[in-house]
Image (tube, rainbow, N blue to C red; front, side):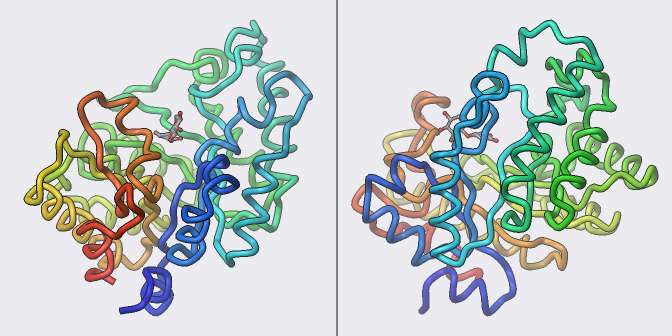
Length: 314
Ligand code: XIL
């Protein structure tokens, strides 16, 4: 059996990982696994608004540039994450009291500067992240509250202008199956395409609970593909109530396998990205108390059943 990236390349899909800047620079075993096993990469935090532009007009490129250099050295396709998001957004934007025209300018400066800097080096941009709530209504944010739903079309057009070659995505969680939230994306995507707005794909974050891969995930991906869009699994992890026993780890392996199989079954699914590599650095325990062990490698950097599930699917 080859590495995941060898197998994925043979199948014509991407297998990506989210990479934390600290781990990439400070943990050689992590950095080695990143390059050996993955042919695509997402910066876990380094390309978010608060990291790049903490105050107006002040851009910090250090971590993002190092991430890009590492991805280039490892021959990885880059998913830029993320241009417009209500979270990890500095208060100078969220509490800035901007008028609609001013906020559109602020958004344009951010998107133009960031997507412009990396133009030609980013394969995909998550242009807008998490714009809908679970019931399919719009999530309140400074962008929606000030600009209305048109901020999404504006952001897509701005990103397209800054980097005409990047594939432009909307990205969210709990849109893997067919439900009110994924229906909202379906309707929005159809309407954006009708208006000629540059939208290329839908990213399904896929932060799952063990044993709960939606039964209609493949069908859901296919309906977006049928609109003429690409789809991608952008942030896969499968969280287990701790402590995780052998049976649960085996179940997790089946879930990873099922997600990859769903992607492989849909022609326009470009690949699967896992949200981290090794369990000890995952965001899961911080945000979902009592849960953990969500990733393909354990704390000893050894492959888990989740890894073999991906390998078997590929
Ligand atoms: C998470 C990171 O993994 C954490 O390090 C950070 O503290 C918070 O954000 N959806 C997303 C990602 O789109 O950007 C989030 O990443 C996880 C949920």
